[in-house]
Length: 427
Image (cartoon, rainbow, N blue to C red; front, top):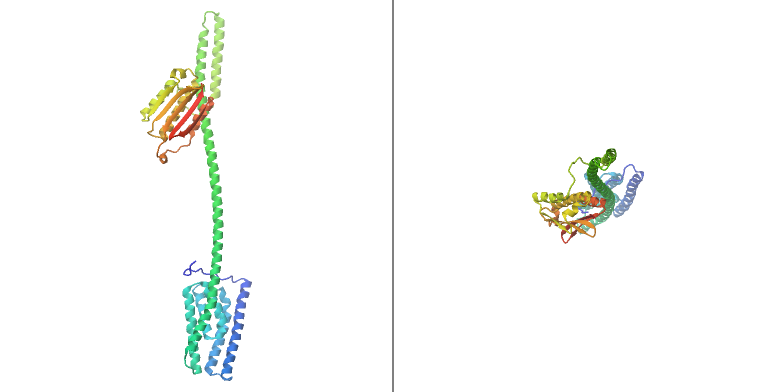
């Protein structure tokens, strides 16, 4: 709050009966009090001149009564006048009326109080100037009518009038300041309440967004797991179909064995062949619904692992594949699903390294230990973390899901500024 930029106080509501009662009370009270002061002063004048005052004093006294009555009647309703230029002018006129006669003094005190509530230094100074000017003019006229010379007593009287006028003016400033302070505190409290409500709404919205993100992440993870299951089911389907087709082929050949009668050989081999083909058809029908893509890529074999590494090297990625306690021939003796799983895990490991640590060397090790086959992929963490590509973690979720579906598991961590991913399946 600064005195150079005060708040314009809004007038009280005109339609309020209480406010009208206050306005009438101000007019009546200031009129009666002014009449009392007027009668006392006029009594001193009559006593001074032995009931025969000069005509000039009588004219000044009549002017005092007229101005006082007008100021008293106006001061009450003027409280409804909106603060502004007209408000300042009429209250300065009533202040000036106090210099003309004593009847206007109570009304002028109320006017000075309202001017003080405006809290405008220029307006306060103007009120003192107007009051001092009218008081000086009337006292000069009064001295001339009395036939007296202007002396220090006259100047002292003007000074006393101005000093007395400062009392209601200062009271008005104090009241105006306190009202503005209270209003400011109310506005701050209301603003604080609004900010608190806004913060609560924003927090609730943020919590809702966070919950939505969690649900979306969980949905994405579930989708990735479902896709990985479908991919594994597709691989198992292709593998079993291959084996069943082989069984059907050999069963057909058995129909030509010489140690059985031709009828029996044909009947048995036809039965085996028909049963294998029927199983193949049923398995294809059941697992067909799990397919999520139309890819016809052949199933991976052990040489596929080397092909994946070579393909990455041709793309400029530094990848090394080493074997520890395990040979490619030994891995080839395992179930086809194990090789397929490691091929997909190796693909994800190379893709993850190329995406998040471009240019960094990737070391992949396939080892056999404690009844399990372990694939370990390591690459240095990039120093410029802020430049990393965005990641959803779906690839690592898929690696873990594929390993778990084969009875194993997978995890990843950072060790000494090195990213390490491990996946294993039972041997």
